[in-house]
Image (cartoon, rainbow, N blue to C red; front, side, top):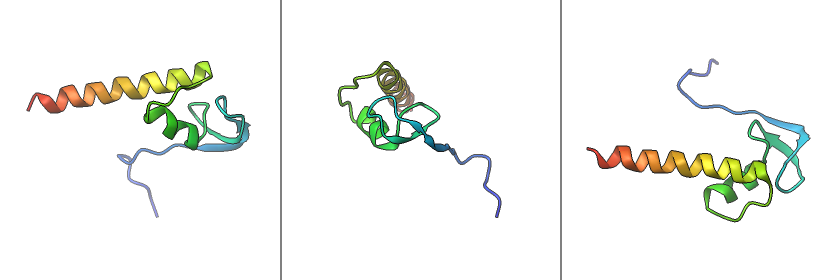
Length: 71
């Protein structure tokens, strides 16, 4: 089975610690999926990595909203 190129993928490294909670299983961003969900939902991030991920998500959401409003 081949994965189409237009499907976003990411890798979770179980040997890498999450910069936000310290648990195992950080993604390429440096935080785990649970903390990524918290960042997307606007929870307060403790680490600089968590705040950076959150800022990128918020910027992407604003750009998406602006793009959808131009229809």
